[in-house]
Image 1 (spheres, rainbow, N blue to C red):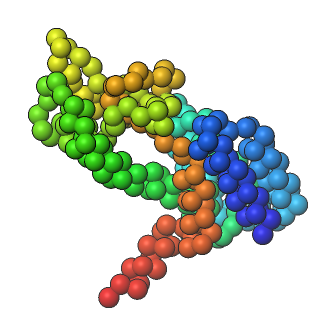
Image 2 (image 1 turned 90 degrees about the vertical axis):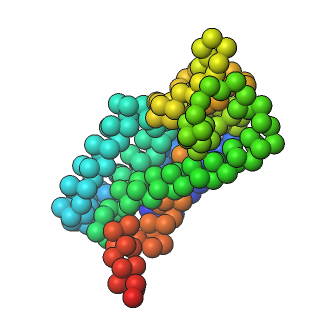
Length: 228
């Protein structure tokens, strides 16, 4: 289907820019939106049927995107990706519309980065114990920092917030930084940070999962039926 081809191609190109430059040309989202609008107009009857079936879920997605925009919890490109996908994508049919399914899958994939990052942090701390020197913290807070935060890394510094402070020569973690909005200030080297990750590749993977296995509710239902 044309919409699938356009979505995969556009998100793949956007993922390359997001991974390489952390900056995505707006023309990609304009292209997706224009193609989506033309398809919606050309297939007007199916568009009306689609909206009648999924209007509530599409409104839920709009509310979620607005909340992320207000809280600055996602980058502008991520929100534009979902907005463009909402105009373009209407296949495959399922209990949830494809844009909302993609949103859910992409967020799940992003959360799965946390244990992976924690393993990397454990390895880095073992190799360089000085990363935890002068931290006046109990063990449980250090463990949370290893799970949620990261020692400074150039690759993770874009949009990251500073996640430590110093009081009378003793360092302390700022665990709440893990929930902070994307920062526009470059964190200094040597500090622990609350990293951000390129989200568009997760959106691409979420879309691929959607077209391959369907929406998460239908998938969960099928898995429950197969379970003994």
